[in-house]
Image 1: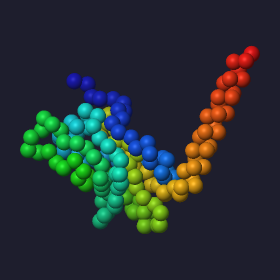
Image 2: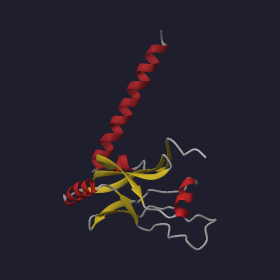
Image 3: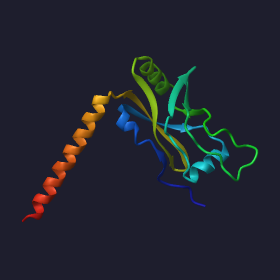
Image 4: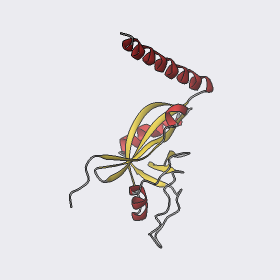
Length: 157
């Protein structure tokens, strides 16, 4: 049987880019059990309310919902348990230093399979204020209107 190739997205946190300013993005592996991997392969996961922490030189993914695999029996784990993230020590120390600064947090952006291995994309982010969110929406609407005007201009000819 050939190995899997490419990238298959399981879950993405679309609201993260609306609520946070993304500074850096890191790719991390995860320590999972067999039923959790099967549940992810079925496309069942939620990153809403998920975040990452760093404790004692280890990175942990918390509050990410990976539901129980229905065909598994005794070795199912709780769906919102802490999962260890696999990052280089230098990345962990860099993130730990940034998180100690006020306003920074680690949030998951997407959960995917890359060449058959489960990966999570985490971002070092700062929370947006309400007026920042409104400004972002206004810029998106202005860009959309400009694109419409440009496309309709070409149709008049």
